[in-house]
Amino acid sequence: MKRLPSPLARAWIRIAYLLPAIFGLAMLIYAFVPHLFYFYNGVPYETWSPFTLMGNTWDECQVMLDASATGSSSAYFFSLIMSVFVVLSWICAILYGIMAAASAIFSCAAFSKAPTDRFANRSKRWMQFFCPNRVLYVITNLLLLLPAAFPYLLQYFYRTQMSYEMKLYFIGPSDLLLAGIFVALNLISFLALLPAQAREHMDMFRLYKAKKDAESS
Image 1: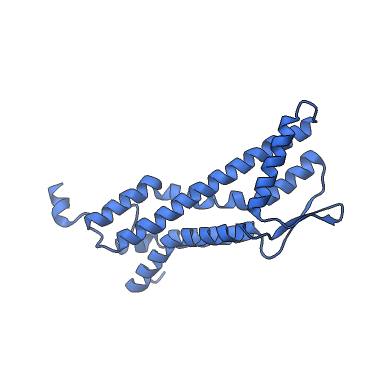
Image 2: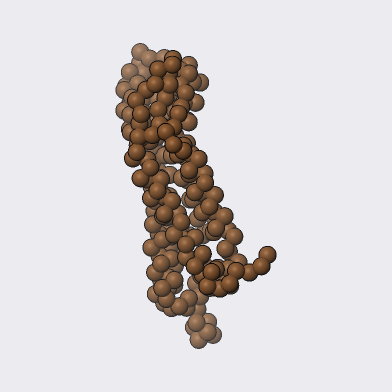
């Protein structure tokens, strides 16, 4: 594969480290907009935003858990598993947000100086404090998919545990589709640019020392 010209490669690397924050912010804004609803017995329910849906699910599940003594085992399992998914969805969203913010802030700081500059290496150390290596960086990008899949999980467990044939619809693209596209673009950009990052000395997971420092160490 032909190498990218250095100015283009450097610009693309900068953008690649900003993409998680850009896409995360886009998903956050979209999650506040009511754009999904369910049909049950041919009747449409209220249009909700993903945040409202998770909040309502949590509240209803806590009521069902409190009444578990007189409730069915199916209702108990449904409320328990959906409560777990609400918590996991929030944890994944928060961890993704931390990684995305660290990637954007510390890459901008590091790339504003020469690769061997102490400030650049200090910025990389801070980045590695929040996301220690490339493997974790890739995994953390994937965390965006779980909260985006929450409406489908709710539909699935309504059907399998509560025998409710709920049909999910979106006004516009689904959150999972958008998240899948964003995650794919994030990871393709990052992984495809690994050789260029090494060549241009713009790898956020590697510290570069000046020749004098390298010789003295």
